[in-house]
Amino acid sequence: MTKLNNQNTREIAYTESKTLRNEAVASANVDFLDKIKVVQYLTNDMIMSVEQIANYYEVSKKAVETVIQRNRDEFEEDGMKVLTGEELKQFRKILTPSSCVCQNEKSQIGSKARSFTILTKRSLLRVGMIMTNCAVATKIRNYLLNLEEVSTQEQKAWAIQREVGKIDRKRLTASIQKYIPNATSKTYASYTNMVYKVLFGMTAKQIKEYKEVRKNDTPRDYLTEEELALIDECETISTALIALEFTEEYIESQLKNKYSNIKLLS
View (cartoon, one colour):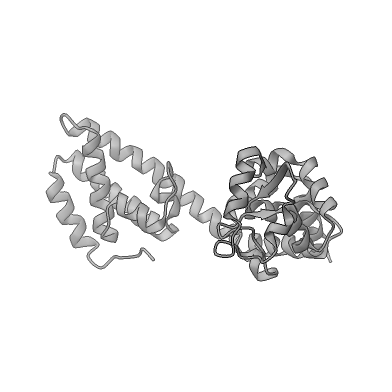
């Protein structure tokens, strides 16, 4: 009974806490929404209307509009946009049978409409976290709770390893700066790529492409705890060998000998 009460309390917390909602939107794979119920879109890039979100949750359009109005800043952060003028005119043009998933999208935008609100799949999730007295929304919050329970310990372990790696990475860069004369940004990049190639057979750029890393993100945020631990170990060894004034070629040969069978990227 206590566990059930705690779950109910946590489920309600989603409706009240913007911070909790932002954490879920940032960490959850929104594709799970398709598993709970089929999602209809305006376009193939998962843009949807207020009406489609209302249909998904089986509530009135007014109910969704009220949720958006009361939490407008959150939905704008998710990518919500109100189209008017030329933008609306151009958007109407892309609502063709070849580019749409739903069959009646055009009917949602009246020919005399002066504005039209479009939202992202993240917005669909956010509505589910906020809306009360809705069975579909309750299912979504319960799904997030179950996901949270399963993944919390794993996420904590990953976060700890990530922080440890950042500390040891600073030791490596400090060692390069101290022991390698005239080191440049290319020197640091070279050691980084050396570690990646030894462990995964890819450069940092190739890993970014392989993992579809977003602009301004680092590849390490997309790696597993085990992969991060190997990088940390590799860079710790490199730090020590640099301090002993071994060449990069020698360090690479030693790492290859130690990690010859490692290829973890999936």
